[in-house]
Image (cartoon, rainbow, N blue to C red; front, top):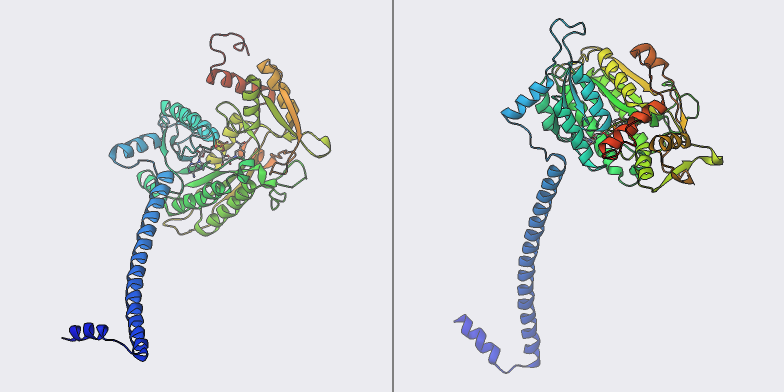
Length: 443
Ligand SMILES: NC(=O)c1ccc[n+]([C@@H]2O[C@H](COP(=O)([O-])OP(=O)(O)OC[C@H]3O[C@@H](n4cnc5c(N)ncnc54)[C@H](O)[C@@H]3O)[C@@H](O)[C@H]2O)c1
């Protein structure tokens, strides 16, 4: 009835006052409707925002997981492969003892491959982990993995930020040592992709140390720092006692941070830690982003090479260190690393904390390096000499290796001449330059 009355009311002729009242009533109704529909819209909007957020976070989770944790791992077959690879194979009663069981991070990298092979060859157990990132041609990393597989070394494809994977590895194998070489290397690339340095050299390092500290027994950790920590230091030769608080690149800063972070884990959890400051490592199976490698490629392809020169036309110089010498330093560090003292994440007593320079002690200028390459390649380089830009490079490096000599018996034996000869021979054979021609075979 009320409805009819309302409809009738609407049809009645109206006085001006009534019109006002009616208009006001209509507006209120309008407003109510409006608010009711805004409320509904608000709820819908909220729903849509929630759905979008859920989708995006799921998408980013899948993306992150697939980027970092894409490796398929686990299962009985996988565990059998890990155990077999980690088992030392020294003959019983061997003078060197039972043999080590080493987790090598960055095993498909340049230094990682050489160290893993050397450990395997002397009868130690080795399991590698590497995320095969695209910083440089991943096919080279895969070729190194194939080489390792042919010697019985298994490399897990995974990221050191994947704590579950690391915990699983330590559950399967009581590693005696970790040789930590995984990192985002390169000085100049840090200006292009700074996050990758934080990801691998800071977050990844902490993730690895967490796994090591929790492991029972705790492994001893030997890891790669870098000569770049000396940064703006100009006292030569660089000694472990010199200042390292003035890094010249983000790469150097992350390596320096690594030295402090490992010290913390040594101090709180009793992890045995040895940090190795490598000086410009080169050799067969090397890194394509490094000058000696890219110079070789460009010289052979007839392309110009960019040679940086320091202030006042001073040539840059590096303490180039041959890979076999570095490998000997790494193995000696593993052999002499004292035990970690913690269990179940708790320290039981002080553990060793060491830092060593591993260099060659004979710096060579970059133009000399180019001349040696020209001689071995029998091609003249097209040099493009430019002033060194302020992108993180330092004008020279020179190692004092007294400490490593004394405590590790480290004694580099390979000159740049000799080392580059071996590198060029490998390069030509790997990239197929000497197929069908004897020209380079007599190197
Ligand atoms: N080569 C040198 O001249 C030199 C000099 C000083 C220090 N270093 C240090 O020595 C170590 C080895 O260097 P390299 O020349 O063999 O470099 P490399 O790039 O060939 O090897 C590093 C490997 O680590 C892997 N990796 C990177 N981030 C990872 C992650 N988050 N999880 C798993 N794997 C990851 C890469 O895929 C790569 O295969 C590095 O720590 C580097 O910083 C090298």
